[in-house]
Image 1 (cartoon, rainbow, N blue to C red):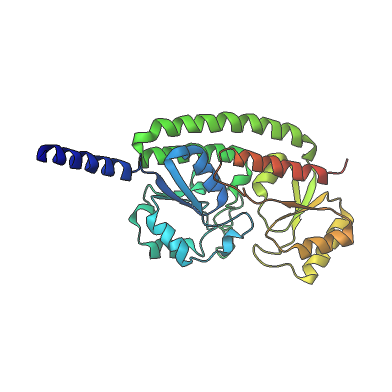
Image 2 (cartoon, one colour):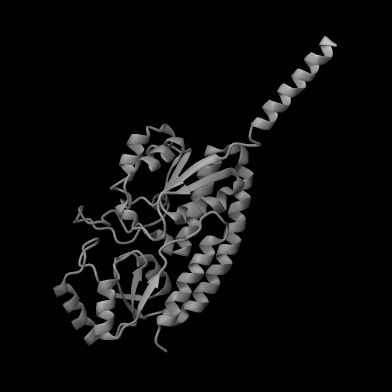
Length: 302
């Protein structure tokens, strides 16, 4: 009877240990922006748990290293950010206060998207410029996103070699779908070629280059500087002398300057979602870019 009782206790202990342990440990990934959270979801699949520090309706230049983010960073196995100075005002603080060795600069868990593609708009003679290191908004170019996805797969495979085959398979699935969609976007957007736009912030250089659009001017006289009345007056003079098809702004930017110029000139304002709204479901990046293209097309004059 005593032997039987000990056997029952042993079986109970084994069951308790087995049931209390997760089937597998997921990588905790802290993304600085939702586009990178979405890409990690695509490539990481079931092996990652992802949180984005920002939303599509927040200016990623202007985030605070709040305690909740520091706590997320302490538990992270990896961070995925834009780089090129976009998060310069808060990411260094986040890294320092987290004291997490896995995600520090130079470690495998420190992933910056802009490290893996050629950047546009570097400003050599003005280090104080917001985009001096190059324009960081590379997620608006599907071709660069393909390169970044490949680099992300390599990093995930290095951190979590046991699941490298799954990351490769997820990358292949993403690339097949993404490349097919890219062909459709480029076909739909052929009428955008050589159209002229004014932008609010210089966020759209990759989208503009990819689609063959011409940027005439920006509402901001310098990156991150709100437009003055005199600057807006100069822009009005410009649009009176040459055709401009639309004014582009993101959802988080002040609508008043673009609406003023639109009222004075008759040029339509196109508000483009700056990133994905939901990063937890595969396919969101493709759906987001579908929305970007569809927003641009109605603003084009026949």
